[in-house]
Length: 126
Image (cartoon, rainbow, N blue to C red; front, side):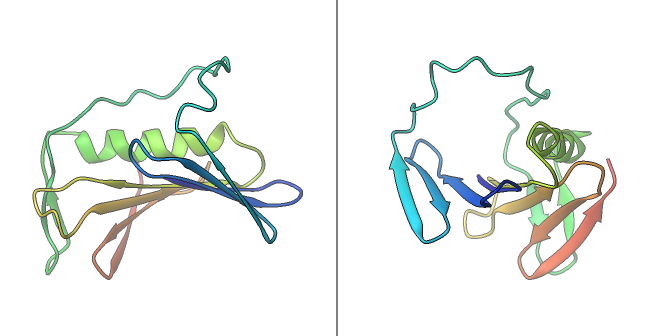
């Protein structure tokens, strides 16, 4: 997951699954343990359930899986972005049945979610 944080100064926060949290601010980089924020009280988080890998067709842009699954993931990404300041963006990659092609979602509060599939981009209004 990556976050482009709309702050002063702007920052980019990246965290691979079970990996360290890397914070980029201007020309500096800080690496934090994966559980660095474990003692922080979080706001209510959006609904998100673990889904089986989605089936994708890179050629056509088709995504199939659990009914409503893609929309749930899209809403969760956009709602996470809405918890952040200004026009921050949250981007996440999700496992697909093709390990070489994850499904990317990027969201900003109040805007359609962008679905990234290979070299293609689609808007998801969920």
